[in-house]
Amino acid sequence: MSEVVAPWIAAQTQTLLSQRGHAWLLAGPSGLGQSKLALSLVRAWLCERPSELGACGQCGSCHAIDVRTHADLCVLMPETVMLELGWPLSEKAQSEIDDKKRKASKEIRVDAMRDAVEFAQRTSARGRGKAVLIYPAERMNHVTANALLKTLEEPPGDARFVLASEAADQLLPTIRSRCLGHNMNWPAQDAALAWMEQCGVDKESARIMLRAAGGRPEDALQFSQWEPGVQVWAKLPRAMARGDVSALKDWSPTQAVNALHKICHDVLALKSGAAPRFFDAADLPTTGSLFNLTAWARALAAASRTVEHPFNPGLMLEALVSQAQRALR
Image: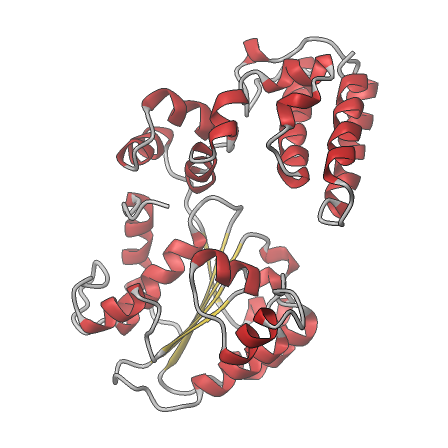
């Protein structure tokens, strides 16, 4: 992802830094930059020369965060996300994964949370306090979340926490009640498009992908960097109506279910006299009954709950496309 700081992230950083609190919960749907805002806050908290705008970006603390080695920062993420974003795992966890004793976890493990609680109680190494960043916070199971509760309620004097979530309703009420809440701001379309162009996306691709992401710029930027997405998005609805499985040949089942949900939503919107959200109206088929489309929506909702099961991906994509074709007849 580009290092260009989105203006809405900078503005929210400034707003939150002007307020006091030992724990923040940043909430909103995916693609609005929760993890970027969380890291921006942490950088400012630990910076040696902070201003009201945030971290200086030049000091030893800022550099240590950039290279993922800050002694006073603990990052809690599922191991799969840590590896994807370049954050180091604990020596024990890395050894277990390297030795194939287990796979990288898709949840935030309770062992990692206990290490984080112990970390928060130690003395600050750089004298600017300590920070714990948890993302996505909804990946804590009940055991992991309960291990955090007492520390959130009675934090060590110089420790601060920021939880970033794309599904805050899944968090324990006791976790939510111990944090100051912040709902992520939706950027204006013009600002989001301008930022994507700064990140190197051409104007037309930025427009298509921002619409495909439902106005969520982080998701749109990530999607635009995945070549099959830009190439086939506008053609995808009619390809599904034809039953063309090859249109999804480079897609994972998770990506396919997400895209099919959006097609179903927009065709239903057109049938109901509303404007589509994810596609241009001209790109959508006009066939399909409300009954069949509603049944398809329910089937996709069921598929989304099991999409990460180790089914045969090719067979699953064929089944999804066949289902779409029947609904769009």
